[in-house]
Image 1: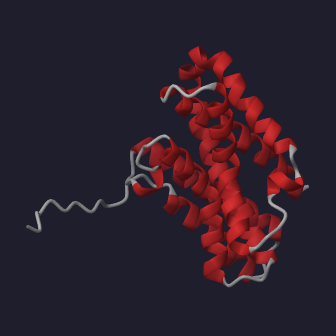
Image 2 (image 1 turned 30 degrees about the vertical axis):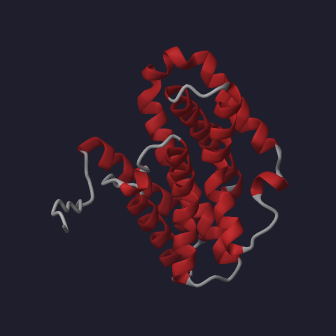
Length: 208
């Protein structure tokens, strides 16, 4: 049952990520092909980079090409409903937060099943959760959210760490998975609600 729920959340998350990426593409006046590509890269890029780095094959979208069709369709659908998207901003922030923790747990699970060390498992979770958004921002010529002060990558690290810690204590997998995702989601939503940020490094001295 937990695997089914995780799969459903994954499908919802990649759909939402593709739609938010389509809006970013629209702000850069991309054509429809660009919209579809940016949607797919954002939704599936984190997992793809993780699999390439870990040597985990086939890639998710190669094994399940329907995910490419789903993300492209979601991106194109966004074009049709773009004028109403501002009304759904809070819903998409929630879905983005859900996607972050779901992707993180999936990434940790893949690395765990491959027998990777703990630090690699946590990093694999962070890559899965965050790198799609980094690729989106780079392609849109923006400073990636990951490198700004928002609690985003840190939420992924906390989620992955809780997941790994729970498994190391031999707690039931389903309990560990849902507890890690719930706490990570709560942390992300509280950060959005109260504008929690990581400390910034500001350096203004001229070396010359």
